[in-house]
Image (cartoon, rainbow, N blue to C red; front, top):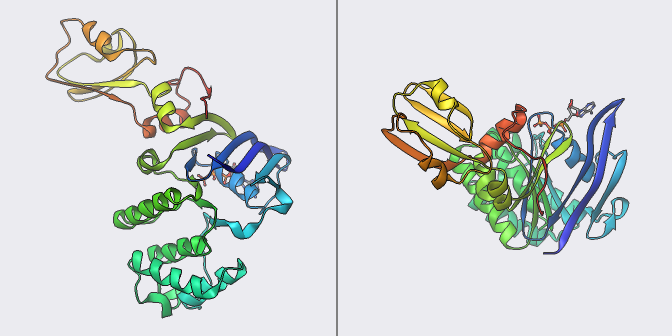
Length: 310
Ligand SMILES: Nc1ncnc2c1ncn2[C@@H]1O[C@H](COP(=O)(O)OP(=O)(O)OP(=O)(O)O)[C@@H](O)[C@H]1O
Protein backbone atom coordinates (compact mmCIF):
# COMPACT_ATOMS: atom_id res chain seq x y z
CA UNK A 1 0.00 0.00 0.00
CA UNK A 2 1.27 3.43 -0.97
CA UNK A 3 2.54 5.54 1.92
CA UNK A 4 0.77 8.89 2.05
CA UNK A 5 2.07 10.38 5.28
CA UNK A 6 5.33 9.58 6.94
CA UNK A 7 6.31 10.82 10.40
CA UNK A 8 9.90 10.14 11.45
CA UNK A 9 11.49 10.64 14.84
CA UNK A 10 9.24 13.57 15.68
CA UNK A 11 10.05 15.50 18.84
CA UNK A 12 8.53 18.58 20.42
CA UNK A 13 9.12 20.49 23.65
CA UNK A 14 7.18 23.31 25.23
CA UNK A 15 9.63 25.49 27.14
CA UNK A 16 11.89 22.86 28.69
CA UNK A 17 9.24 20.12 28.85
CA UNK A 18 9.65 17.35 26.26
CA UNK A 19 6.08 16.54 25.22
CA UNK A 20 6.70 14.05 22.43
CA UNK A 21 9.89 12.28 21.43
CA UNK A 22 11.00 9.83 18.77
CA UNK A 23 7.52 9.40 17.27
CA UNK A 24 7.58 7.49 13.96
CA UNK A 25 4.72 6.03 11.97
CA UNK A 26 3.18 6.20 8.53
CA UNK A 27 -0.32 6.28 7.14
CA UNK A 28 -1.02 4.41 3.93
CA UNK A 29 -3.58 4.84 1.19
CA UNK A 30 -6.88 3.17 2.05
CA UNK A 31 -6.13 2.38 5.68
CA UNK A 32 -7.37 3.60 9.03
CA UNK A 33 -4.42 4.21 11.31
CA UNK A 34 -5.40 4.93 14.90
CA UNK A 35 -3.31 7.10 17.18
CA UNK A 36 -4.15 6.33 20.78
CA UNK A 37 -3.06 7.26 24.24
CA UNK A 38 -4.33 8.58 27.56
CA UNK A 39 -5.07 12.27 28.12
CA UNK A 40 -1.91 14.30 27.72
CA UNK A 41 -0.05 11.51 25.86
CA UNK A 42 0.80 13.87 22.99
CA UNK A 43 -1.67 12.84 20.26
CA UNK A 44 -2.96 16.34 19.46
CA UNK A 45 0.57 17.74 19.59
CA UNK A 46 1.61 15.11 17.03
CA UNK A 47 -1.37 15.95 14.83
CA UNK A 48 -0.81 19.72 15.14
CA UNK A 49 2.77 19.24 14.00
CA UNK A 50 1.59 17.22 11.01
CA UNK A 51 -0.92 19.96 10.19
CA UNK A 52 1.76 22.66 10.35
CA UNK A 53 -0.08 24.43 13.19
CA UNK A 54 3.14 24.16 15.15
CA UNK A 55 6.64 23.10 14.19
CA UNK A 56 8.58 20.14 15.56
CA UNK A 57 11.97 20.52 17.25
CA UNK A 58 13.14 17.23 15.79
CA UNK A 59 12.21 14.79 13.06
CA UNK A 60 10.56 15.02 9.67
CA UNK A 61 7.06 14.91 8.24
CA UNK A 62 6.51 14.04 4.59
CA UNK A 63 3.31 13.73 2.58
CA UNK A 64 3.51 11.86 -0.74
CA UNK A 65 7.26 12.47 -0.56
CA UNK A 66 6.80 16.24 -0.17
CA UNK A 67 8.75 17.77 2.71
CA UNK A 68 6.73 19.65 5.33
CA UNK A 69 7.04 23.07 3.66
CA UNK A 70 5.85 21.74 0.28
CA UNK A 71 2.88 19.69 1.47
CA UNK A 72 -0.12 20.38 -0.81
CA UNK A 73 -2.54 21.27 1.99
CA UNK A 74 -5.63 20.97 -0.24
CA UNK A 75 -5.04 17.21 -0.34
CA UNK A 76 -5.49 16.98 3.43
CA UNK A 77 -8.70 17.12 5.44
CA UNK A 78 -8.63 17.88 9.17
CA UNK A 79 -11.22 17.65 11.90
CA UNK A 80 -9.59 19.40 14.86
CA UNK A 81 -10.19 18.43 18.47
CA UNK A 82 -11.43 21.90 19.29
CA UNK A 83 -14.64 22.39 17.35
CA UNK A 84 -15.84 25.67 16.01
CA UNK A 85 -17.35 27.05 12.84
CA UNK A 86 -18.34 30.65 12.12
CA UNK A 87 -21.60 31.02 14.05
CA UNK A 88 -23.79 33.34 12.00
CA UNK A 89 -23.09 31.83 8.61
CA UNK A 90 -25.41 29.43 6.80
CA UNK A 91 -24.33 25.80 6.66
CA UNK A 92 -24.03 25.66 2.86
CA UNK A 93 -22.17 28.97 2.72
CA UNK A 94 -19.55 27.82 5.18
CA UNK A 95 -19.09 24.48 3.39
CA UNK A 96 -18.68 26.20 0.02
CA UNK A 97 -16.32 28.78 1.50
CA UNK A 98 -14.10 26.05 2.95
CA UNK A 99 -14.19 24.09 -0.33
CA UNK A 100 -13.14 27.24 -2.20
CA UNK A 101 -10.20 27.69 0.16
CA UNK A 102 -9.08 24.23 -0.95
CA UNK A 103 -9.48 25.13 -4.66
CA UNK A 104 -12.30 22.64 -5.03
CA UNK A 105 -14.91 23.28 -7.79
CA UNK A 106 -18.01 24.89 -6.22
CA UNK A 107 -20.63 22.99 -8.22
CA UNK A 108 -19.12 19.68 -7.13
CA UNK A 109 -18.78 20.93 -3.56
CA UNK A 110 -22.46 21.88 -3.46
CA UNK A 111 -23.48 18.47 -4.74
CA UNK A 112 -21.27 16.74 -2.18
CA UNK A 113 -22.52 18.98 0.63
CA UNK A 114 -26.16 18.15 -0.15
CA UNK A 115 -25.36 14.43 -0.34
CA UNK A 116 -23.54 14.52 2.98
CA UNK A 117 -26.26 16.56 4.71
CA UNK A 118 -28.75 13.93 3.61
CA UNK A 119 -26.51 11.07 4.70
CA UNK A 120 -26.06 12.66 8.15
CA UNK A 121 -29.79 13.33 8.69
CA UNK A 122 -29.36 17.06 8.14
CA UNK A 123 -31.45 17.34 5.00
CA UNK A 124 -32.85 20.88 4.67
CA UNK A 125 -30.29 22.37 7.07
CA UNK A 126 -28.21 23.89 4.28
CA UNK A 127 -29.95 27.24 4.74
CA UNK A 128 -29.81 27.23 8.54
CA UNK A 129 -27.15 29.26 10.29
CA UNK A 130 -24.52 27.33 12.23
CA UNK A 131 -25.55 28.83 15.60
CA UNK A 132 -28.97 27.21 15.29
CA UNK A 133 -27.49 23.71 15.15
CA UNK A 134 -27.16 21.38 18.13
CA UNK A 135 -23.64 20.37 19.19
CA UNK A 136 -23.84 17.02 17.41
CA UNK A 137 -25.28 18.62 14.26
CA UNK A 138 -22.45 21.16 14.30
CA UNK A 139 -19.98 18.34 14.58
CA UNK A 140 -21.50 16.63 11.56
CA UNK A 141 -21.17 19.86 9.57
CA UNK A 142 -17.56 20.16 10.67
CA UNK A 143 -16.93 16.59 9.56
CA UNK A 144 -18.45 17.42 6.16
CA UNK A 145 -16.17 20.47 6.02
CA UNK A 146 -13.15 18.22 6.52
CA UNK A 147 -14.07 15.92 3.60
CA UNK A 148 -15.89 18.24 1.19
CA UNK A 149 -12.80 18.63 -1.03
CA UNK A 150 -12.13 14.86 -1.33
CA UNK A 151 -8.85 14.86 0.61
CA UNK A 152 -6.38 12.04 0.08
CA UNK A 153 -5.36 12.13 3.74
CA UNK A 154 -8.00 12.71 6.41
CA UNK A 155 -6.95 13.49 9.98
CA UNK A 156 -9.70 13.09 12.55
CA UNK A 157 -9.00 14.21 16.12
CA UNK A 158 -11.66 12.70 18.40
CA UNK A 159 -14.42 12.58 15.75
CA UNK A 160 -16.85 10.62 17.96
CA UNK A 161 -16.80 12.74 21.10
CA UNK A 162 -20.21 14.13 21.95
CA UNK A 163 -22.08 12.08 19.35
CA UNK A 164 -25.07 9.88 20.13
CA UNK A 165 -24.75 6.17 19.24
CA UNK A 166 -26.69 6.53 15.98
CA UNK A 167 -24.48 9.40 14.83
CA UNK A 168 -21.37 7.50 15.94
CA UNK A 169 -22.49 4.65 13.72
CA UNK A 170 -22.99 7.03 10.78
CA UNK A 171 -19.51 8.47 11.25
CA UNK A 172 -18.04 5.01 11.64
CA UNK A 173 -19.58 3.82 8.39
CA UNK A 174 -18.55 6.94 6.53
CA UNK A 175 -14.96 6.77 7.76
CA UNK A 176 -14.79 3.10 6.68
CA UNK A 177 -16.28 4.00 3.26
CA UNK A 178 -13.71 6.72 2.77
CA UNK A 179 -10.89 4.32 3.58
CA UNK A 180 -12.35 1.67 1.25
CA UNK A 181 -12.33 4.29 -1.49
CA UNK A 182 -8.63 4.96 -0.96
CA UNK A 183 -8.48 7.80 1.58
CA UNK A 184 -5.66 7.46 4.10
CA UNK A 185 -7.09 8.10 7.56
CA UNK A 186 -5.33 9.06 10.78
CA UNK A 187 -7.83 8.67 13.59
CA UNK A 188 -7.39 9.78 17.18
CA UNK A 189 -10.06 8.49 19.52
CA UNK A 190 -10.67 7.40 23.09
CA UNK A 191 -13.51 5.09 22.11
CA UNK A 192 -11.55 1.84 22.20
CA UNK A 193 -14.48 -0.29 21.09
CA UNK A 194 -14.81 1.78 17.91
CA UNK A 195 -11.07 1.80 17.30
CA UNK A 196 -10.96 -1.95 17.76
CA UNK A 197 -13.69 -2.37 15.15
CA UNK A 198 -12.34 0.16 12.68
CA UNK A 199 -8.57 0.50 12.74
CA UNK A 200 -6.28 -1.47 10.45
CA UNK A 201 -3.19 -0.41 12.39
CA UNK A 202 -2.58 1.48 15.57
CA UNK A 203 0.06 3.58 17.24
CA UNK A 204 -0.35 3.87 20.99
CA UNK A 205 1.63 6.47 22.89
CA UNK A 206 2.11 7.25 26.55
CA UNK A 207 3.89 10.25 28.04
CA UNK A 208 4.99 11.35 24.60
CA UNK A 209 6.52 8.05 23.55
CA UNK A 210 5.55 4.99 21.56
CA UNK A 211 4.34 1.97 23.51
CA UNK A 212 2.65 -0.13 20.82
CA UNK A 213 2.73 0.06 17.05
CA UNK A 214 1.36 -2.53 14.68
CA UNK A 215 -1.64 -3.98 12.92
CA UNK A 216 -4.71 -4.59 15.03
CA UNK A 217 -4.29 -8.35 14.52
CA UNK A 218 -0.64 -8.32 15.57
CA UNK A 219 -1.36 -6.23 18.63
CA UNK A 220 -4.14 -8.55 19.69
CA UNK A 221 -2.17 -11.69 19.01
CA UNK A 222 1.08 -10.57 20.57
CA UNK A 223 -0.02 -8.21 23.31
CA UNK A 224 -3.55 -9.11 24.20
CA UNK A 225 -3.36 -11.83 26.81
CA UNK A 226 -6.20 -14.14 27.62
CA UNK A 227 -8.53 -13.64 30.53
CA UNK A 228 -10.58 -16.36 32.16
CA UNK A 229 -13.87 -15.46 33.78
CA UNK A 230 -15.01 -17.92 36.43
CA UNK A 231 -18.31 -17.82 38.27
CA UNK A 232 -18.23 -19.78 41.52
CA UNK A 233 -17.50 -19.27 45.20
CA UNK A 234 -13.70 -19.14 45.31
CA UNK A 235 -11.12 -17.62 47.62
CA UNK A 236 -9.35 -14.65 46.03
CA UNK A 237 -5.92 -15.67 47.40
CA UNK A 238 -6.27 -19.17 45.98
CA UNK A 239 -7.20 -17.83 42.56
CA UNK A 240 -4.22 -15.49 42.65
CA UNK A 241 -1.91 -18.43 43.38
CA UNK A 242 -3.06 -20.43 40.34
CA UNK A 243 -0.37 -20.98 37.70
CA UNK A 244 0.14 -18.30 35.04
CA UNK A 245 -2.30 -15.90 36.70
CA UNK A 246 -1.02 -12.31 36.64
CA UNK A 247 -3.83 -10.70 38.58
CA UNK A 248 -7.42 -11.30 39.57
CA UNK A 249 -10.40 -9.00 39.72
CA UNK A 250 -13.16 -10.45 41.88
CA UNK A 251 -16.66 -9.13 42.29
CA UNK A 252 -19.06 -11.24 44.34
CA UNK A 253 -18.94 -14.72 42.81
CA UNK A 254 -17.36 -13.71 39.52
CA UNK A 255 -13.60 -13.52 39.13
CA UNK A 256 -11.62 -12.41 36.10
CA UNK A 257 -8.19 -14.03 35.94
CA UNK A 258 -5.68 -12.25 33.68
CA UNK A 259 -3.27 -14.84 32.32
CA UNK A 260 0.39 -14.58 31.35
CA UNK A 261 1.30 -13.68 27.77
CA UNK A 262 2.44 -17.10 26.62
CA UNK A 263 -0.40 -19.19 28.06
CA UNK A 264 -2.14 -21.71 25.82
CA UNK A 265 -5.72 -21.65 27.12
CA UNK A 266 -6.40 -25.36 26.49
CA UNK A 267 -3.26 -26.42 28.38
CA UNK A 268 -3.87 -23.92 31.18
CA UNK A 269 -7.43 -25.19 31.67
CA UNK A 270 -6.14 -28.72 32.24
CA UNK A 271 -3.84 -27.39 34.97
CA UNK A 272 -6.72 -26.06 37.06
CA UNK A 273 -6.89 -27.90 40.41
CA UNK A 274 -10.08 -29.72 41.43
CA UNK A 275 -10.86 -27.37 44.31
CA UNK A 276 -11.65 -24.44 41.98
CA UNK A 277 -15.44 -24.06 41.99
CA UNK A 278 -16.70 -23.51 38.46
CA UNK A 279 -20.35 -22.79 37.74
CA UNK A 280 -19.55 -20.94 34.54
CA UNK A 281 -16.28 -20.36 32.73
CA UNK A 282 -15.27 -18.45 29.65
CA UNK A 283 -11.96 -17.55 28.06
CA UNK A 284 -11.53 -14.42 25.96
CA UNK A 285 -8.74 -12.28 24.65
CA UNK A 286 -8.47 -9.06 26.59
CA UNK A 287 -9.83 -6.10 24.68
CA UNK A 288 -8.02 -3.09 23.34
CA UNK A 289 -9.81 -1.16 26.09
CA UNK A 290 -8.13 -3.33 28.72
CA UNK A 291 -4.72 -3.02 27.05
CA UNK A 292 -5.20 0.73 26.99
CA UNK A 293 -6.10 0.90 30.69
CA UNK A 294 -3.10 -1.19 31.57
CA UNK A 295 -0.77 1.06 29.66
CA UNK A 296 -2.38 4.21 30.96
CA UNK A 297 -2.10 2.99 34.55
CA UNK A 298 1.41 1.61 34.00
CA UNK A 299 0.45 -1.92 34.94
CA UNK A 300 2.84 -4.56 33.73
CA UNK A 301 0.46 -6.71 31.77
CA UNK A 302 2.53 -6.22 28.66
CA UNK A 303 5.83 -7.98 28.99
CA UNK A 304 7.72 -6.40 26.18
CA UNK A 305 7.19 -2.96 24.86
CA UNK A 306 8.07 -2.27 21.30
CA UNK A 307 7.50 -2.55 17.65
CA UNK A 308 5.44 -5.18 15.96
CA UNK A 309 6.01 -5.41 12.23
CA UNK A 310 3.95 -2.37 11.32
N1 LIG B 1 0.71 24.91 23.73
C1 LIG B 1 1.17 24.19 24.74
N2 LIG B 1 1.99 24.71 25.67
C2 LIG B 1 2.48 23.96 26.68
N3 LIG B 1 2.19 22.64 26.86
C3 LIG B 1 1.36 22.09 25.98
C4 LIG B 1 0.81 22.81 24.87
N4 LIG B 1 0.02 21.94 24.15
C5 LIG B 1 0.09 20.76 24.78
N5 LIG B 1 0.89 20.83 25.86
C6 LIG B 1 1.22 19.72 26.77
O1 LIG B 1 1.64 18.65 25.98
C7 LIG B 1 1.20 17.41 26.53
C8 LIG B 1 0.48 16.62 25.46
O2 LIG B 1 -0.73 17.29 25.14
P1 LIG B 1 -1.66 16.83 23.94
O3 LIG B 1 -2.79 17.81 23.84
O4 LIG B 1 -0.83 16.59 22.75
O5 LIG B 1 -2.18 15.42 24.49
P2 LIG B 1 -3.34 14.47 23.95
O6 LIG B 1 -2.74 13.10 23.88
O7 LIG B 1 -3.92 15.01 22.69
O8 LIG B 1 -4.37 14.55 25.14
P3 LIG B 1 -5.99 14.52 25.20
O9 LIG B 1 -6.38 13.07 25.02
O10 LIG B 1 -6.27 15.00 26.57
O11 LIG B 1 -6.51 15.40 24.12
C9 LIG B 1 0.38 17.75 27.75
O12 LIG B 1 1.20 17.60 28.88
C10 LIG B 1 0.02 19.20 27.53
O13 LIG B 1 -0.12 19.86 28.77
